[in-house]
Image 1 (cartoon, helix red, strand yellow):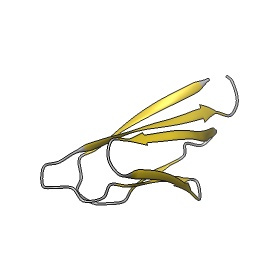
Image 2 (spheres, rainbow, N blue to C red; image 1 turned 90 degrees about the vertical axis):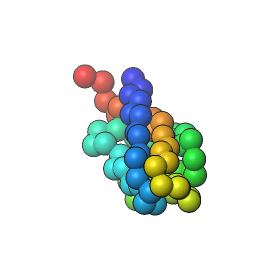
Image 3 (cartoon, rainbow, N blue to C red; image 1 turned 30 degrees about the vertical axis):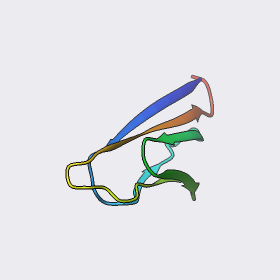
Image 4 (cartoon, rainbow, N blue to C red; image 1 turned 90 degrees about the horizontal axis):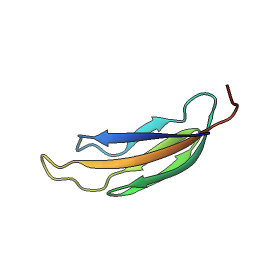
Length: 68
């Protein structure tokens, strides 16, 4: 089973950090701007420069470690 978590950032602060959910493994991240890396169980999204009122999205994909 693969669960997809879509994250919407409405911030001009970088980086944004999302913890890998308990019981899941990181699969991938696809940001609309900047880059995402996995570091110590956290997905770190470096947005780069954003103007006032700008927004960006990242699609984060995790896989459940066990069925049930």
